Image (cartoon, rainbow, N blue to C red; front, side):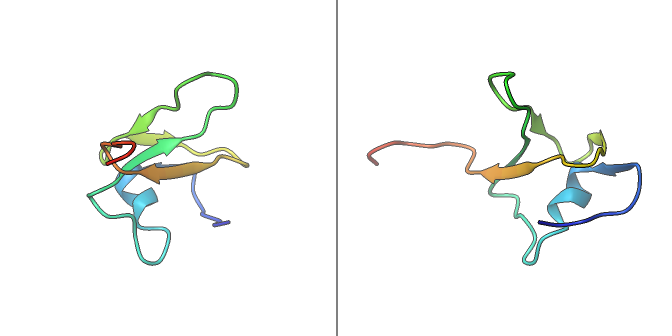
Length: 66
């Protein structure tokens, strides 16, 4: 779990929170329970932060069985 200060952050700033930072070889997503697909966050996108928000990263392409 990470704690940040401020009402907003860009996708690039969110990527820099963990150590090591989330690299450009992974996509960043915001968890939205019950909505289906989680929205992808671009590096320049401004995210309005709310307590309890969750994010994750994943490879841009997933090839099961490859």
